[in-house]
View (tube, rainbow, N blue to C red):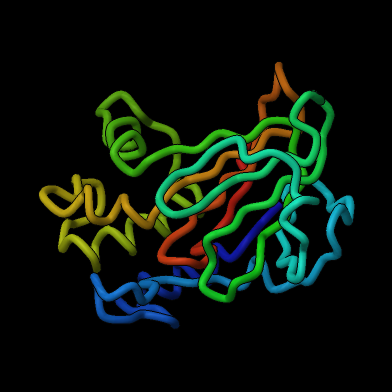
Length: 191
């Protein structure tokens, strides 16, 4: 599944992005349209798709299972290991984002950098890796492939990775969502 990779490349090539705002003001540095679709609660979205869901009663979200960087992930059936609806709040438009997964993990920017910048990591950059480099570069002034440095804690307060898996175990593919300053900055599939 391909998401917004061409827009990230265009963003890098032009050294600017649509939605670029002043850093540190709560304005997103980068935004995508991967969540442009509207979905009813419990819509049964295909794995990898993330859509906007508005007007959901908090009691119908399920259980809050993770909170990080201003976002909360809700699991509609937390005792299940089957793919099911998950919801995320913390977006500037006041709506939720909905996706289907069997397992969801959060990842902070410090861990991302620690893994991504290891010399032994030869895995090609994903769409979300590339988007993070754009955000980090504008926010921290750090070149691609180098740590954010002293501003990493501030960047991490409103930037987080969500990784969704289609099965609870033995999954060799996943989808990663990069959330930043109240928007979905990008999404990408790994195989």
